[in-house]
Amino acid sequence: MKNNVSKIKLDLTGDKPAEERELERTKKGSIPLMIIYPGNPDRPGVFLDGTVSPADAIKALKYAIKYS
Image (cartoon, rainbow, N blue to C red; front, side, top):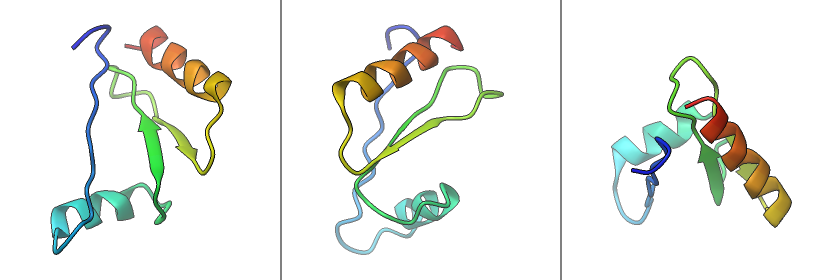
């Protein structure tokens, strides 16, 4: 893990109740969905869904690094 950032893949193929609960927890309920969480658990994640521009992805990653 570099800069306290890690990748987690949520695969909803088949019967996976734990993954479905995680999707429900985000309150978004749709996929594809990307959430960039900083290392500091007191800070919220950045939700990116639909078409994500490179600028949006970089902004979210910078936020995660800043607050890790």
